[in-house]
Length: 385
Ligand SMILES: Cc1ncc(COP(=O)(O)O)c(C=O)c1O
Image (cartoon, rainbow, N blue to C red):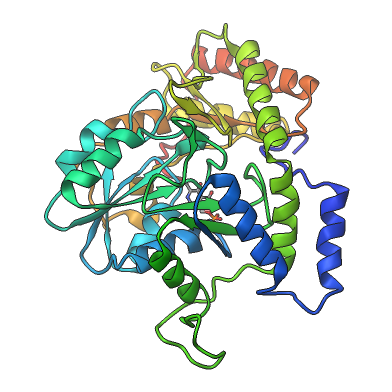
């Protein structure tokens, strides 16, 4: 791709810090893990942070540590990454998909209560594309029904809700550091929580079920290897040191896209600000006007990629994925999810994106939208390809 969809931003000092670790005897469970965890906890404003091998691992550990198991229902959006529901299925729990609201594409809090049954154990709320969900309403519903709240902040490190960082509002919050994220460790994630018991359980489960008092060959419970290496953590420490500059740069890019595309009548742009929230820009996702079909969107996307401009379908809803067909039938109609998912298009978005590249992205996009508007391109109907 001439202009990729995303690209990591790793600086020389960070490369040196990773190389430095390789000269020490500590490649796992060493001082960089402790430093990374302390820095994440301080940055987020949480009592504890636990470094893990991925965001998925972090979510899975939360589900397991909270005792969510076979037959338990958990409320989740479908308009998100598949890991959100997968981690429930690992534990034979049931994802109950609830529709999103059209402005922020986050879980529609007004629909949550209707989805609660006596089997509901938790709400797994996702801060989609880095925009905080309606936490006040969701926490209130959870309080009334005695439900856990896990915040999936994998796309939202640094985002704020009422001036506090997301991740600290629920029983636990989870971050992810894959290379397309705001900050990266290559692969990696972190769980944050203020609950000391949950911290101890997540730590034990991350490390093959060893509790703090176990020796290396004693395992108090069934666990996993979800550890993160010292090299990953060294990179994370460096990246976290400059997170504020990264978030500001990403916000600047979002504003520039907004300026360039504002007059395109066939596009709906993401809101640049939402009241009482700070957005941590993960991706820049535009939506085609309602009269466009999914086939037209897919054609535009394919043509953008053919022209060397990386575009993606954020998101293909989970309930339409082949891995989910005949597994869980949504009880809610998920109309907003399906409508938005058919028209979404993620544009190239990374710290070092240049102005002339943005010009090229927007010029090509407007050209293709105009072409697609004149005809309905043929092609097979795809739901979650
Ligand atoms: C909302 C959400 N949850 C979970 C994950 C999983 O994170 P990871 O890829 O680190 O396992 C992602 C990753 O993109 C995500 O976007």
